[in-house]
Image (cartoon, helix red, strand yellow):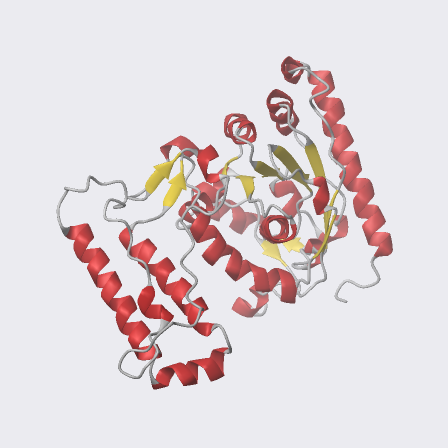
Length: 380
C-alpha cells in the first residue's frame, strides 16, 4: 500500500504543502476579454492569440539545459493555441458567439492557457500530490452541476468553518457511493468566503483501485491515518473525515440516518495534537440516492469489496441502475468544538478522546433528526 509520501509526482513541480494555501498553483491567465486597441489587416486580433508562453525554466522540475524536448513541446502547444485563436477570430468567431454567448473568447482563452500549462508542465503539486489548478478547473467544474442542478445542495452554517488555519470536518457517511464526500468538497469551496479546499481522509480501498488512486491524490485526498491527518491539520488545511467508513455508506436503507460506530476516535486525537477545532457536519439526502435493499455478500467476497449493493434499480436496469436518484440535499455545518482548551498530550487520554468522540457523534445525530423533521420531501 502506497502512503502519501510515496506518491509518484510525475514530472510536475513539487512545492511545500503550506505554500499552496494562498491560492491557485498557477498564475491566472491575462484578461483576454478586453477589447484590443488596434486592428491588423482590417481584423481585430483575437485574445486567444495572446496566450502567454510558459517560462522557459518551468519544465516540470527539469534543468533548463536538459535537452530540447520541453522546448519543442512548448512550441507545439503555442502553435496549436495560435492556430485555434486565429481560426476563431475570423468567421467562426461569430458562430461561436451565437452558440456560447458573450465572453466566450475569454473562457476559451483561459481553457487554452490551461491546456498549454498542462502540456508544458507549468503547474505545481504539493508533497501529497494535490494539484490545485486541476482540481479547481476540472474536478470541481465537473462536480458543480451535479451539486447545483441535480442534488440542489442547500448549504448551511459554512461560516462556522474558520477562514484560515487547520480545522477538522467530521460528517456522517451514507449512500452506497461516497458522493456525500464529493458534494461536501464542492459546498466548502463554492460557499465559503475563502474558497477553501477539503482534504479528505479516504479508505485504503480508494488507493488500490486503478485510476482512482491517482485522481484522489491529485484532488488532495490522502490515506486515513493519524500521521497524515495531523500533518495536514498542522499545515492549516481543512481536513474531512467520515468515521463510519464502509459501515455508513453500506448500511441497509432501513437503517438510514442512524449513525454507525465512530471507531476509536483517532480523528479526535489528531485534532487534539494539532490544537484545531472540530466542525460537525450533517448531510441529509444522500441516503436516498441509492436505497440499499440487499447485499450480494458472496459476490462481494469474491471481488474483495466491502459490499455489492442491491437497490430498486441496480442491477435490474443495468448501467441505467447506477444513476443516482435526484434527491434534494442539505449540508449543515455545526458550531466548532474547541480542542485547544486541552493540552496536546491530552490526545493520549482515552477517556477524554472517547468523550469528545461521543460529543461529535451526538451532535451530528441530533442535527440529522432536526433536518429530517424540517424536510418536506425527499425530492423537492
